[in-house]
Image (cartoon, rainbow, N blue to C red; front, side, top):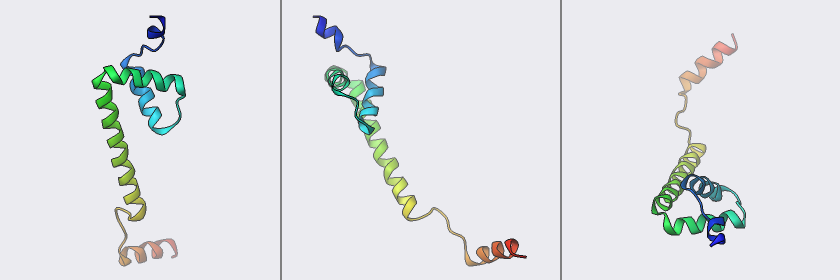
Length: 87
């Protein structure tokens, strides 16, 4: 039973390490604790699934913005700025 206490987790730790695990290596002990917790805690499992989806949406939006800016200046606006900068 001592090993069971050793891998016991609370939800906050599980959520923090689960999100951290999506972005970086958390080590084998924390990973085992996380997986064990997720077997029994459906709320944490749902939270981490939602966090993964949210990360994917944010990454897609970031990629879209890097390829196509959300706004561009018209040629008239560009000329106006150039005239103001170079009197």
